[in-house]
Picture 1 (cartoon, rainbow, N blue to C red):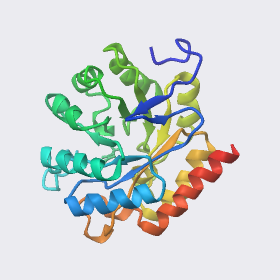
Picture 2 (tube, rainbow, N blue to C red):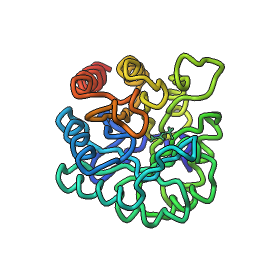
Picture 3 (spheres, rainbow, N blue to C red):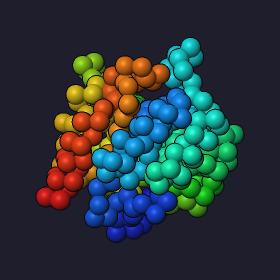
Picture 4 (cartoon, protein in one colour):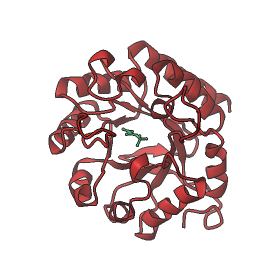
Length: 263
Ligand code: PEP
């Protein structure tokens, strides 16, 4: 269902009216985690003012340590919905448990399935039935074929509104959080008709890598980027070191706009 053989034309997925795929390069930005209404609002305004068309933000956080901030849950979803009303930005937010899909879908414009859950088949099936577009991140240990098969689980339930997201894979290299597999962008686009975006924040893990990795993503033909932003990264409860601040965002918008216009 998701293969290029099944559909020779590349798909465009609409999220609350915003296209991902096709002629535009979509910029998605927002906090890694929803912490407070003020922090989420400030991050959303930064994102919107820089030209982002979708707001990201996690209310359910899949953390390596059970002692780390796990997200605000439904209270976080309510904050996101309020901020959507204020800014007009449709929201992309992660769901980590099949049992929560209906609840998260009642607030979200797009469901995110994270790297750790790429092969959580019950979750994929539930997301396929939720009536919302799905952002499917590549498992950090998954081949491109496994990633496309995970997308197939969602598609099989009748939902073809799927966007693939390359977010780095595990390699021997530890200078970066994960290794951004830039070749996955054209390879996935050759094999599948689905849009492919890149997360330079979770792959690089460092603020000063986000812009160069975004440049690489857009130059490789990515249909968009999804980045973390925070009004005060030093106080962030999750992934502060990779969050962009105000000035970086304008530059990112420039990179996304200029490069995609040229290509
Ligand atoms: C995220 O985008 O908030 C996230 C946790 O990403 P990943 O699943 O790629 O680690």
